[in-house]
Image 1 (cartoon, rainbow, N blue to C red):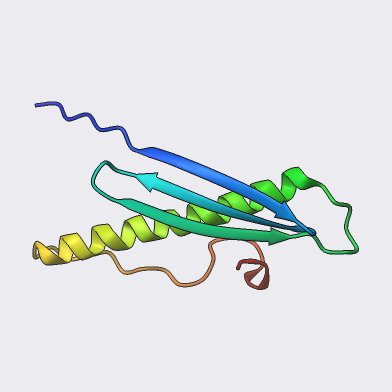
Image 2: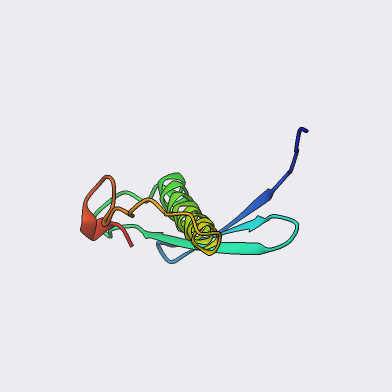
Length: 99
């Protein structure tokens, strides 16, 4: 039997005073998860809004993905299945740059 689901993801971006904030929402039909991310422009750098948008959106989606994985881990544990150990720290970039 084939199962088909459609989950909707919405992403809102707001830029104000050199800071971009993003909110990513995943609607599964039975629940909604919300991820948050932000980026700021270093005053010494050129202001390129697209870069702030990409960073904030990527961080919001990464937050959302982490929440989804933690929810799946909780559900697997509740069913008696083991989970995969989680890595710590960012997988790329400078740790102090990841918020």
